Image (tube, rainbow, N blue to C red):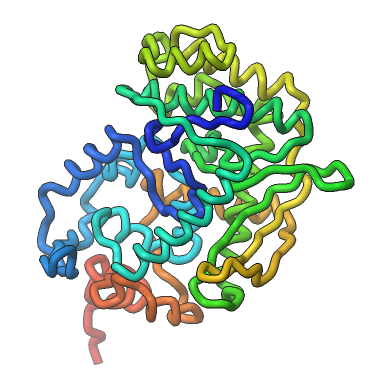
Length: 371
């Protein structure tokens, strides 16, 4: 958003213009191409039905011989908050989703589309969307920064903002996401409101609520670091491989000027963003709230006020990032949560299940005991 009440279309920016609460992965143009290229030579595999009934090959476990980290293997410069939320639900499932980015059950796709429409309708209640053509990843991030710059004064004046981008380095990995909504309560507390849509008119199970609570905890963790000056431009450039001196595209420049921002490059915008975040006196988030609504009727099913558990969040982050940095193998669910496999698209070919709690290809045969 370069002007009050007007937001740059995130479809153009390379980031979802809707909260990532409904999308597990939204990659930049270059990231998408790299991810596809990394899967061009699958090894021996199990197979899943894909679009049009065609079989999709899934590489078997070769990670024991692969010295690259998952970040390198999947050609990722950063992760989305929802990557970690999926990891919190089932890490093995999340890995399969990375290995098969084009595979999505039709029913799940329909649910995501409906949820996305509801998110968009809510976003349009507070501002319009303006499509900005982009040509580079620098332009894409510039659009993201323009949105942040225009939202900060609205939040300072105690207004309501939606789809606020957040980013920060966590355990050596850049984590990005989109907060559904930020507003102030009658008592002057800054509240984060996360919208969750439900296909059936009932609240989710505790396991799903646990995943959702982790998500809003992550948002607060990153947002608080941003307004406290703990996120640096150097870290962002290092992870995203952005060129701060690269001139912005004409459409982005024109929109920036219309919003009153005199900039020429991405570096100029970054400097404005980090100064605005640290000098605006924005508070940390006080309240975390999750609202569950029925997709078909838009009926509110219930709300949850979530406690911020910093110690638990840090512990989970260390554990999950250890996988992404290549320090350990991925893990499936414990026996107590094996019921999750009943709704998993990859249950039939899951190496974790076949191995009885560890990838079957790394289960080594034990020597027979001499009687």
